Amino acid sequence: MKKIIKLLFPVLIFMASNLIAQNMHQNFPPFFRGKAKLQELEKIKLIESLNLDENVTLRFFARKNKFQNKQETLTKEKDSLLNSLNSTFNSGENKSDKYYDEIVRKVSKVDREMLNNREKFVKSLYNILSPKQIAKFIVFEFRFRKEIRNFFLNRKHRMLKR
Image (cartoon, rainbow, N blue to C red; front, side, top):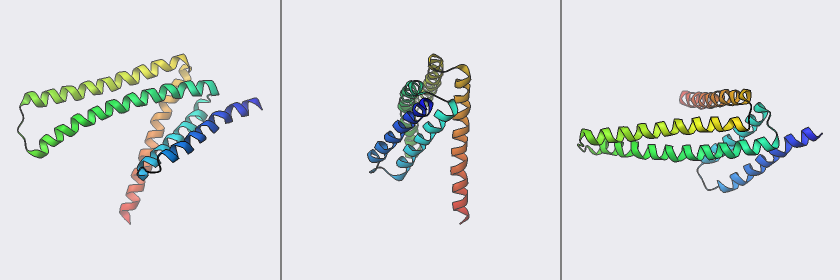
């Protein structure tokens, strides 16, 4: 009975956070509302897959959220660099090779920071998860993203056939 309560408590917390997230995202476009639901689904499946208890669940997702926030910041920085480069191309401006070289170096630097951030995150998991659980997490992320990508690609393909 205690195990059931311990398992249901994190699920209830995430369900409550899902309701809060839905209320917060009511004014956002449907894509963002779907993204929040997708993240909640990922959390629930991840808890089941890794068989996490309440304490570990809270610590794990605190670290994962911190990691994701940093990755989002770096992604925005990279997008900004690429958007400025794209604007340069679209405007027909003639920039020097030094300019292009500098942008490419900055993009590469951000990519390295993203990889380093991911490596630090995975290393930090060794404090709370076993090596087997970390391996399961890595495989879970790979499979989950692949399934989501395939779902949307198949959905797009079905829509194009209409």
